Length: 295
Image 1 (cartoon, helix red, strand yellow):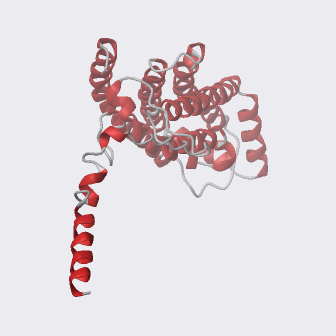
Image 2: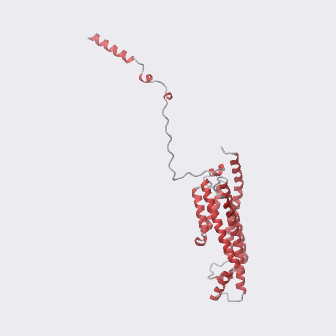
Image 3: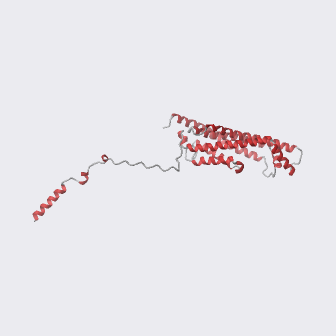
């Protein structure tokens, strides 16, 4: 039977899970909408840094709004990972609580970096446009690259983004691993969360696959915590305790030895089976008498 403490854990997480489902959906919408709005302010056909700076100077408002929406989305999604980590911590003492700040710091740094980078690019773009020099040609491209490379604000934004990605990705990987170990996620979704977290860490090389995968995985976390995923809620969510998955490499359990039969379990006696003793002897005597009379 579940203890009173376990029941309190289930009730607490049930209330929090409903809030997390709403914040996760809003976070995914905010992050996706923000990126699309930012992209709408940039010409995909721009061939060099000079043209891209001109685009940024003309569409700063939309780029800033998009970066703010993306920042809000990251913060809301951070609550999803934090909720999962806290659920793990209630079920095992082996998860390092000292790593929890990474889950909080990561999304905050990503939010700050997005806004700082947008402001930094706008400052560089305005300097590039207002200089009164040609906006195209090799000289313009070299000047644009120098302005971007010399911008302290952009350097701060880039460093903050790298730190935020590393912290958030590690928080996702660590939480997914332990959630799988205590039974809050299946092996498939735990492994998938770790893979998407690693892909998000390598976004510079793998592109948006990690970011999109993390969004999809977080939706699953929010749904499974509410028991709304296929197959219903997992036992670890229902009991408030760790319910580890069986080790697939473990040998099968040995069969229990059979108990020896107890004679008292059998009814009746041997005489009931063989019939009444003595009757076959009487029949034999009658046959002998008949033979004597005939003889």
